[in-house]
Length: 132
Image 1 (cartoon, rainbow, N blue to C red):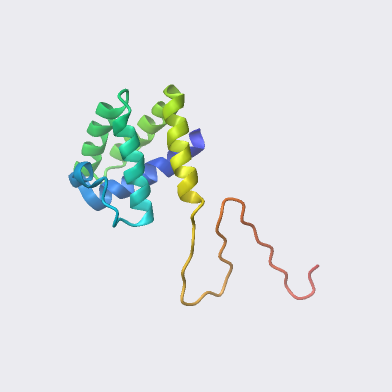
Image 2 (tube, rainbow, N blue to C red):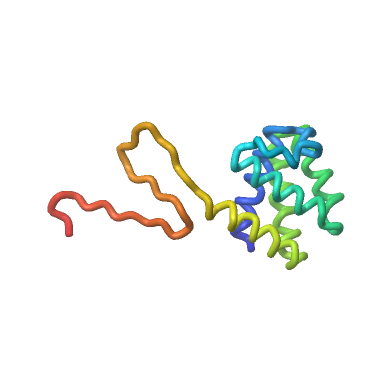
């Protein structure tokens, strides 16, 4: 579950960065981009969990007030880790939200000179002339 912490924290941070305190009223907005939408879905789940709601409200408000403060972001990471460790039901819910979000990855580019990999198990191998 610890590998989920950076994903959850990044999505929640992006959501707070986009909306600030308005996160608490805009969490259902369907027009948000994918990362912010993931943060919104995670927030909806966290605020619906009675054991974590109050703590996350304070932490996310603090992050909205102090967005560039590394300590505010660290507090969010620690709180996410504690929630995942202490509430297995919540960890399963958040994990499923992240899994579903990551399974729908797409890329759109105008010009590419390298490899673009998407998906959970994407891998590539580049063959140079003479290699094999």
